[in-house]
Amino acid sequence: MSHSKKAHETFINGLNCSQSIIAQYAEHYQLDLATACKLATGFGGGMGRMGGTCGALTGAYLVLGLEYGSQDSSQKDKKDQTYEKIQDFTRKFEHKNGACQCRDLLGCDISTTEGFQQAKDQGLTKSKCPGFVKDAVDILEEMLNKDQS
Image 1 (cartoon, rainbow, N blue to C red):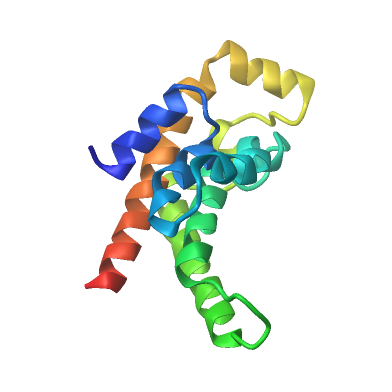
Image 2: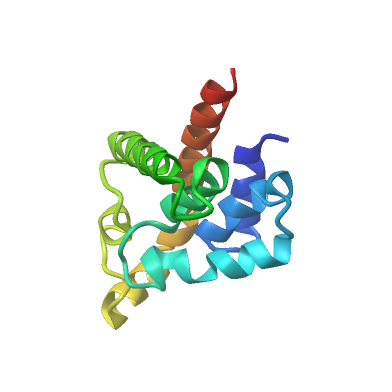
């Protein structure tokens, strides 16, 4: 099963968007699954359910950091490369989905009581978010595969 399908399934089964993405790559980067999921927990719902940057993006950002990131202050080139990869990923995701902010993607602000209730009543996290998770993994896979070939 592809990372994309696994991430979709993981999201449907209860992990948040960010966790669903990092979970697919944890083993590859020698990160135990529990630690990876704990690390990504706060990014769901647009950064702690504040409606900001979609957790599917932040999950992908974590993976991009694991792949390209710097380990110390002497690795400025790696930091710059990671920033470029994140900018490229973000442009691709926004092009595909029209936005990168959770509140814009869902069409309501889940940081408010009313917006959260609207999302719940309309089943937005079940109808829209799985697609965002899939799109994020598809873009991530394309980027990672391109660099490895």
